[in-house]
Length: 201
Image (cartoon, rainbow, N blue to C red):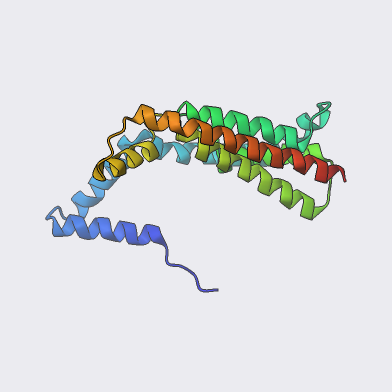
């Protein structure tokens, strides 16, 4: 399989070329780039969070999460993922899109808990559960964030419609996103409960 070139390398190359053509010089361009990274707190946050998650994983975060769900009576894989889907969609609708995610929640906490709830050691079943855990996060975020007024996707849709002569306020777009979010929750929620039935068989 042919490897794709590293996109970050070309982005940095484009930044340097733009700075040089603009007369800033290499040093000033790099300083400006560094200052922009430093001033944007949300850009620096993953560099702090990811090592902490790695350290917690090394000291048994996955095993602890699995043990907690194993002690809960009535907990099933589908119910756990359904609860997470609801949490993810509601938090995204409030604009808290970075409160959870694949790297910081699904891989170290949610997937091990869902696997433990299934009680299965079959590698194929475990992979299926991991895929459903990742899907719950993606679907919850994707359909929840459009309800929030100040999210980039809402502003992009508003700008596109305005360019085509349709004037809509962000609140109108947010309200129209609610039925879609509810349908997404119902449809994917049914898939998660169906997963429970498949696991029982």
